[in-house]
Length: 94
Image (cartoon, rainbow, N blue to C red; front, side):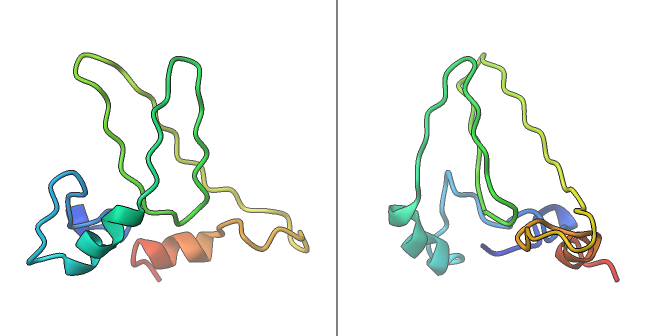
């Protein structure tokens, strides 16, 4: 929600860990519906393309995040995978 943070459509201007209700009322309404997951060593969480998410690591702990956009072969039946055009649209490129 509220894309444009850091000058990119891939990031939000809003801080989900400290919601400014006056500036971001839709985020304030969405937060009670947010899903929360606590991962431990060796766990993996897959987020489908386009899912807004926020990550917070405990102080002194490390985490790794990998973003991968794949192009499927033409004629593939997986219509949900992103393409260069959807990525370019997300970041405001033509």
